[in-house]
Length: 228
Image 1 (spheres, rainbow, N blue to C red):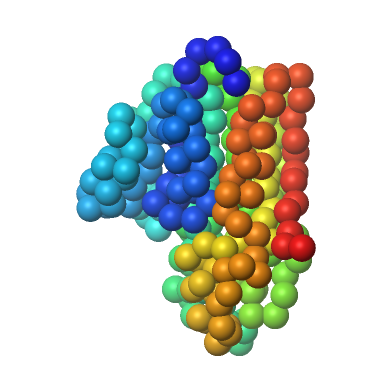
Image 2: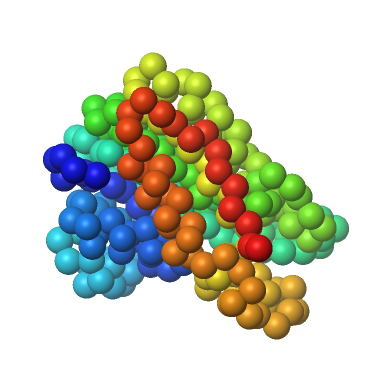
């Protein structure tokens, strides 16, 4: 998209879909604000994306987000970070529930709240990388699906609340995608992992960038992408 250089806050830029989105935005000359969970990861991101601003906070502890120094204007916030822990409800520990609900739902809500003044100033977009589990909850996926169903509710409420400020909100629901997280899911499921069987992270990133580049006269509330 032509025009002034835009600025994007991206979580999960170290791996998977978030890494592809960050790379694509960086390659085309957009400015990046990247969230790292610790100083070590911050150094890795700074080296991978020269010129990017890297801020440090742990999504597992959303209170650490309160001290973030954010720009006055943000053209988008892309929530791509997440964790997954499978198991039947009968066996899932309190810690497993708390981690997934905190990282996948509470932290995005807190970070979005903190970024809203900058998003309103730029009439920007919030893109929440959700999951097929945010639409359908299958056996063993109770905690993760609950966090992603909640993320969809967050997006729906935010979209209605912020439309008057010009902030657009999109939920992206990828099916199984060839990422390190998917490899971890297969490990937890006890299945062999074949990346070629699943949607490429680049394909999902294409959708995210399409949403970010929409003219101001349109919004995509939700988009679903599945393996063939």
